[in-house]
Amino acid sequence: MFVRSLRLSDFRSWRSLDLDLTPGVTVFSGPNGHGKTNIVEALGYLAHLSSHRVNQDSALVRDGQRQAVLSATAVNHGRELTAHLVVKAHGTNSAAVNRTACRSPRDLLGIVRTTLFAPEDLALVRGEPEQRRAFLDEITVARYPRLGGVRADYDRALRQRNALLRRSSMALRSGYMTEDGEAALATLDVWDAQLARLGGQIMSARMQVVHDISPHVAATYQRIALESRPAHLAYTSTVDDALADLGIMLGSSAPDREPALVTPEIAEATLLGRFAERRDREIERGTTLTGPHRDDVVLMLGDRPAKGFASHGESWSYALTLRLAAFQLHRADGTEPVVILDDVFAELDRARRRHLVELAAEAEQVLITAAVDEDIPDELRAIATFHPVRARVTADGRISEIDPEEGPAERLAEGPAERLGGTDGPDGAGGADRTEDDGGVDSASSTDGTTGTAVKEADDDA
Image 1: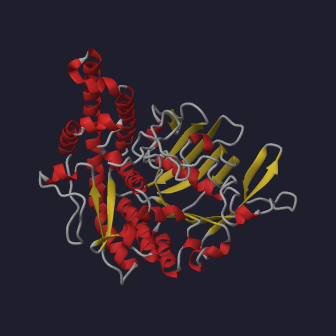
Image 2: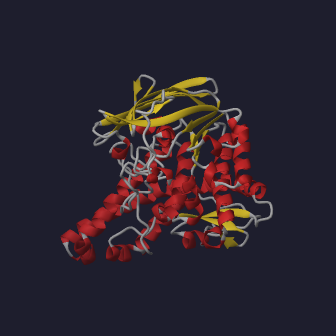
Image 3: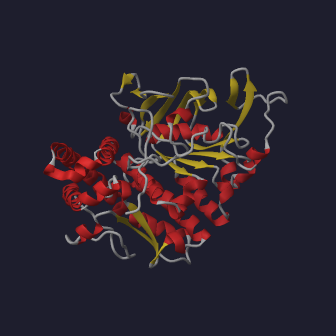
C-alpha cells in the first residue's frame, strides 16, 4: 500500500495542503513547531480515526475555523480508493469514500493503513496499561475493522453502566426491597449483558492479535538485541482466574509457549459471571471493575517483566520491536502499511537506527519527519525526497507551508521552546492534553466516529 495524494484544509496549522506522494522515502524537514508532524498526524487520523497526540478532535481544527477536511488517495494492489473525512470542532464528523457518503466515519477503516514510530513509543514498555491497550487496539481494528464499531458500542455501554452505578447508588443498595431498587437492578442487568457480549468480542480479538504477533516479537527482538534475554508477551485480563478454571491460562508467558486464545462466547460468559460476583463491590465503588477497559499486555524479558526491570536500552529495543512486529504482522496479513517515522531518529542509537533503515528499505512507502536533515541516516538521505516545511505569521494566523520560497520576512524565528522540542506551536498538542475519563476502552486508539470526541477509561484501583 502507498498513499498517492494527501489534501488538507484547515487541519491544525495547515490552511491548505495539496501534496502528491510516491512510493519510497519522503522526508518532511523543518524546525519543531512549524507543522511537519501535523502532516503525518492527518494520515494517521484517517487510518485509525484517532490522533496519537491529542484526545479532543477540536484541537485538530485550525484556530477560528469550524471544521477541517482530510482526504487521502491510497493505492492497494493496484486499486485506488480516496478517503474523505470532515472533522468538526464541535459536532458530528462525516466521511465519504470516493464520492459516496458513509454511514459512519468507521467505514473508512482499512482504506489507509499506517504503522507509526515516535519518541513516545517508550511508553509502550514503561507506561501505563492504556498505552499498551491502545497499541493492541490499533492493530485489532486494522485487522478487523468491524471491531471499531464493537469498541465504540462498548464505550457507550460502559459510560451508561458507570453512570447508573453512580447516580442510582442508593436504589441499587436497597436491592429488590423497593421499586426503585428493582428497576435499577433490572437496568444494571441489561448493561451487564451488553458489556459482556461486546467485551467478549474485544477480548477474543485482542488475544488473537497477541497470539499472532508473538513470534514476530520474539524474532525481531532477538535480531535487535542479540545478547539480551528472549522477549515474549501475554494478555492479562480481569478474569484470568475464572478462565484458568477452564484451562485457559492468561497473565503469564514463556518463550516456548504460545499465548492463549479464547472464543468470544467463552469470554462473554466469563465476564457475565464476574459481573455477578462483583456487583456489590461495583455498586459500592460506583464504577465498573471488570472488562477489557482494564486489561493489559504483559511484556516479558526472560522471566522478568520489562516494565520495572528492563534497562533504558532494552526498553527502547522492546518498543522498537513492538512497532516492527506490528508492521510484519500487517504484511503477513496481505496489506503492507505506510511506515511513519515521526522525529524518531534523533532518539535512537546507531544500532537501532540501522534496524529502522532496514525496515525502510523493505517498506513500500516511508514518511519521515525530522527537525534537521542530518538526523536522517545517510542510507535514507541518498534515496529520499525532501519537502521543507516552514510556518509564517499571516493576517489569517500562523500558517504552515510546504516547499516554501523562503524569505527573511516569512521565516519564523525559532524560539527556545521550539529548539527544545516544545509543543506550543502548530506542531504540538494544540492545547489539548490527554486526560483520563471514566468511560471508554482508550482514547489513543478509540473513537466512536459520531461525536467527534474520543474517550478513555481511567484505570481504577481494583
